[in-house]
Image (cartoon, rainbow, N blue to C red; front, side):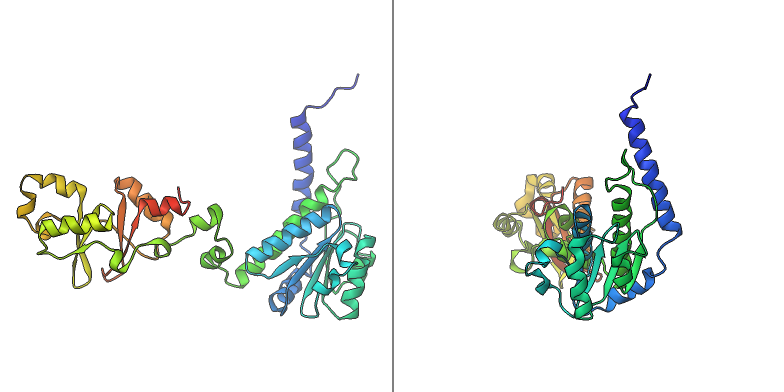
Length: 319
């Protein structure tokens, strides 16, 4: 009697097969990898990535990863390329073609186009003697590992290895270009990624929006300043430097004779501050930890540069 395997056992088998294949790829990285990275670092145009079927989906992902990490890249569908989109591929570009067998007929027109105009061609395939491999300038050969599907035909292991190889290329290019957090933010202005990389300086209030008072400012005028600016705080400033902060708590503690005091007599000295170059998420953490709703930003010399309110962080999507 045949026993039906449990889904978890099937899953473990698949993951083990793909893990082993990635291990082979790790231990036997294609010899041309360094040359390919050097080429892609210096190509004056874009990296064109293409493939058909499941390889096409992987190609689109590789192109998107490269584009978001500092390497201009574009996915071109091989079928559309044969009907006019070859014009997207110029002599300034380099082309990466993905085909497990290396004999995908839909890639023929792109291969011919690269040969005609001397466009660098990089092949990602399992078959070193295939048409794609022999026509390419550089070969990134996939490990000869079995597919993880039950019939050994559905692209599984091969697409996993191709995806991992594409990530390796993208990250190598990213690091060698010196691509940093600031660059990443420029390509990810929306959503959670962009929000987590925003700096305080990107959202802080500056100039005449800041509630600023001097040591001898009467508390009546201080209250008017706090009310007008709407942050619930005021900055005590001397020669441009932040020397203290007045909060609602300071007002309550001095309520009995508040109007007889000056701002300097009410302010809290040595307030918590943040650098304008700090991440907005860090500022939110300081505010949450200390149960405050606003934080003044100062530079290395103590000069007041701005104010960030908890609502600014929430509006930016930092939560």
